[in-house]
Length: 288
Image 1 (tube, rainbow, N blue to C red):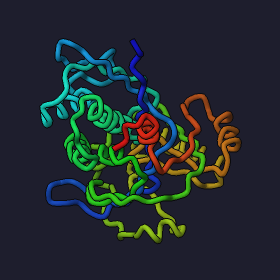
Image 2: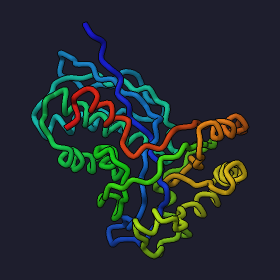
Image 3: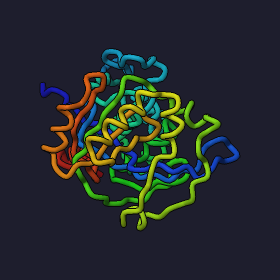
């Protein structure tokens, strides 16, 4: 019998992140631009005859009740009445708690692949609406296109920024997103910008950086080191802890990676305006 394939769940970067205000429900009004990179976790889905949806192995630091892959599979089955048992295995590569979207990406891969394997027949927009119930970033990964996002991240518009090589560096700390968005010193009054202004080269930053670096000195140190390596182009993704810089070519990015202090982990990957998962689905004839 043919072995079940491994499906990619790529990381994302927030090329900028502005916080425009706080809503009455406590959520924040945001502007951000998501771009994927060709660096991914991998997921495998194997049918089960007993009807159970289970994880193969344990993701360190993730309780079974919080496993977004299991929640996504159960939600899809409950909403469509289709599908059976499945075992879900994950090969983790994306740093957890780094602002790179690993958990959300895994959930989106689960929805997209099982939608096909179980013949659920949902369109991408319907899957994105399901994904929003799992997390604000999940729809971005479901749609699989670099996107300008507003609101809490649910209003998205495809964009096509340049696709440079990135060096992504993660210090040895975990930054809880909820802590940063609750921080009293977080800037929440950024004036709105436009897609045209950003793509024309307007300087855009991450409003979470000051609050994060005050609380997590290793992130400040990683940003400073990467700024020296990249002529000042060092940014933080989401609420961190991962930071990144763009390079014109892979060799230059890898030279900096080779000089990276051992207290950090890092990788080099190409920016991608179309998700690695969606390219794989298309190659397999499963893109809908």
